[in-house]
Length: 508
Image (cartoon, rainbow, N blue to C red; front, side, top):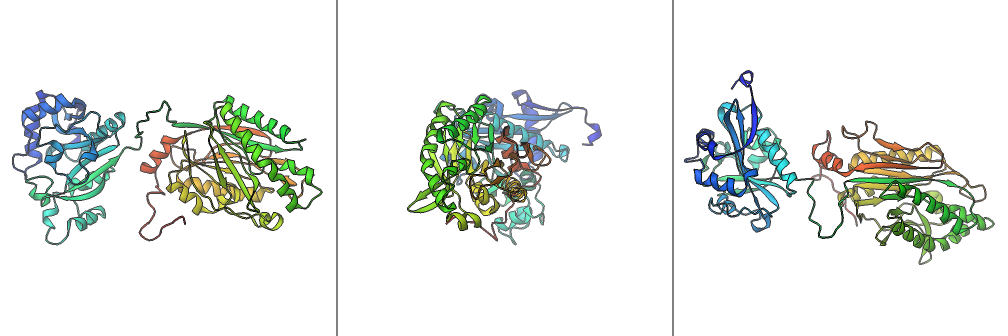
């Protein structure tokens, strides 16, 4: 049909009144398969069992194509099944409204209406239905109708790869992969009588990135997460109580805005070293370790009482006579987990005798998986890539830098981490001066929340930022659904496009 002749395109639910048109359309659509049309009783059964899954597309009032589907419990079938298995010998008794996968039974466009991208509308409807019903994805057995022309030369696997590389044209398979369906397996004997496909089919899958596993606990799954960053002013404190009074003030402030996280900077408790300023730098930092345990416990209490997850920045800690730079994730449910700085700076090693830790992991929270890297660790891309592979959505970086060039290293590397790992990155640092603490004299910081650079995000990759070198808080919302969309449909897809066939990254 000439596009200029189109007056109306309508997507509608299929009805029995459409049956005669449907039958004629299927006969035209499948000329190489004998009796390739559904009987009226089949369509009646599908409409009774799952009316929302049966759709028609009409052009100028004429049926131009259709898509039929059911819901199944996929684990009952797995990857080794036939068309008869899925449909229970065309009875559709396999349909289960409580299943987890939308299975495509049929989809076609009449030859005269092809080239108008009508099939895309049918697939888009299926995807929207899958998301609406919170199903894991869409699966179906796809024909490869041109394979019979190459069966003497190529295996089905070789044929599929050549089609994907555009070296061979297959109208059905090309269309399916262009609609984000990915081949899982080649199946022999899937559809009886499909001689054009040489009795082969390709099991194809589309994953619903919005799928949420049913939760039996009364806990909401957060999609929009609110971050509270504390840009901490270094100032003298009379003791631990006064320092924690200031920390509670900030926790109270960001929780008033219903923040899900509060992020403190690296070594925010350094002012407490002033009482040991008469000692060497190495002795003074070790003296500071006596506060780490009580600060952790007090932050845990604040997390519960203010209903907020607190990332405690970092503090020095002695384990087996070794000095480490560590921090704690204090969840609002009362649980606590520890993280370590993996790479210590030359200054931390030389002046304090600090060594790097060995612990690298993601953390499960009520807002999804997060990662935490302390300052210098953000400048080593391998660490955040490992965390991204483990499912990290938000990377938190507490930092401490004395000069603007040191801050620029952290800032620019953090922005790279957001782009290459398709995640949000939040950095928080300290500002001000500590004239009575050796090796901690000055600080420079600008805290911010960074995003990937694509159409759904700020063009410069900065969601929000503080005023440099000014004590303040920063509140920013990040949408986790945008990350899922980016992973599947972004202008570039850094995670998906990695060449794992020539390089890999493994955690020891």
